[in-house]
Image (cartoon, rainbow, N blue to C red; front, side, top):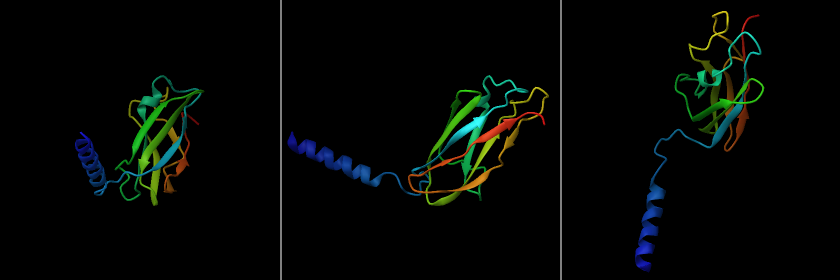
Length: 136
């Protein structure tokens, strides 16, 4: 019985040592923040479901990295976290709005700030906040 347990442990350790890596773009850095929704001029129900925080390499902005989570928060805001980002490299952080999210005027909400660069450190967290607005 002891031999079987030792053999299973060695096999498991060997499997763990050889899995992963191999060009994986995942890492240990995180980007977190909030998206402030307009206080008026837009129906905010379900707005968080129509937003996407995109963290990418500046050379390939359409190729989103990491695991994004965005959920409704208090006071007309959405909280987000993008984890599993590569560290020790420059990344771009931006916000995208689905085409269905509109202001009461029918216009697409304005996003501030524009996508910006951030240098991620190993096991680091960068904070970025965005604001959606409708009208002047």
